[in-house]
Length: 190
Image 1 (cartoon, one colour):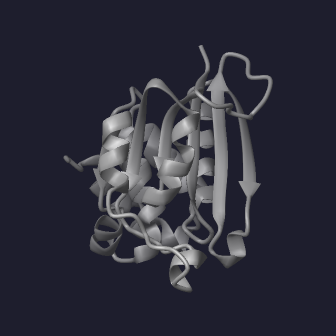
Image 2 (cartoon, rainbow, N blue to C red):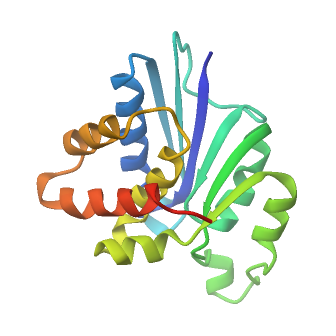
């Protein structure tokens, strides 16, 4: 059985590190893993989408509409953008931190107030203020690892495997910060 995880965010939020951690955990569990990164205008605050697929044998990394078991969204509007990819009965984990897209920044559009409510009506939704968890850990840049921690708590992957992969993926000088962020996410209750 193949598992499909779609990670979506805005350039600079650490979606690529999140995909490397998830891929590393799947490999540590003995799965065949494929990862694909789709960069929009990531350096200008645009969307970044990463697909992580794992299972006994995975042919392609692409996750089509209605195939994602989990959507890990670093921003609510990006979560809404990824909703068509979520399969029926799939789960969304969404950071509640808003990052205004360019049309909102320049005043050409308004950020919708009801994004999370609409998502809750259409998906099994876990909302998390991952920015607050990252700040508690010591750095706002740890939002990605806090979200991974939230997702990890509902998997059957042992905690020690997550820690081993973090140690092998994150630079040593940032390890303590990322372990703290992961743990805050891992202990999070909505």
